[in-house]
Length: 285
Image 1 (tube, rainbow, N blue to C red):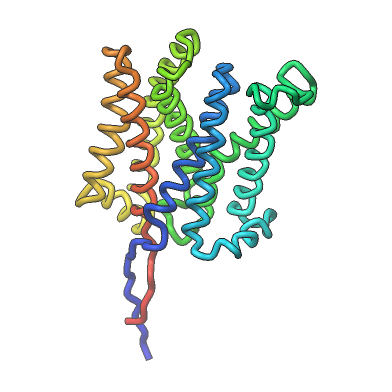
Image 2: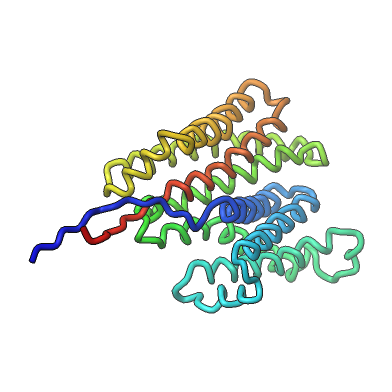
């Protein structure tokens, strides 16, 4: 008796906009906190970073459908990147809040600040946790062997650099609220460098996978045709990277607009990566 197997490529349908928003907000908040620490930005920037990560966590709970069971997400830190991510997010929120609090007048009575050992330690722990908050979504996706387009060691790097670019974008957007020019200029330069880095990483990722397994090649094709293709090429590449880079280079006074465009592109990037996920189904023929 002879059996034949037909190979069928299917796009994943489980993760879409809500997950994209969660990945976007979490990475954005983690990256923004890193910029807050590196460039010594005003305290309100640290608060915005915390708010973004908390909002991302709430979106994730909504996606889970049964928030009462969300505690299970933390139960397998040795084997699950989702568990590690939940731990990183929880640690970041706690350490980040304690680190920023003394800089606010209402909490000025707290005995630690940046000049104390305890304050320095809290800031370091929060920054390390923020780094993992920005990084871990890429590891969550890359740990999916059934979807070759995600199962790439380059994906965590892509997500990290995209998160840092989004953080630079929101810093530009927040600049009228009190970010000093001395800190804003290096952030503008950093945004330009990150745009170039993201363009290069995306090109390498797509080029590599276009020569890989059939499912990965199909994912690349989906990013080059149809509605998803236009979303990727116009929304991610043009609106999210090329236009902001042009504005930064020739109209730096319009950096706020560049920041807004970067954020639009960052959200669409995560959506496109999720929707391009293709797996192989092997029904009996």
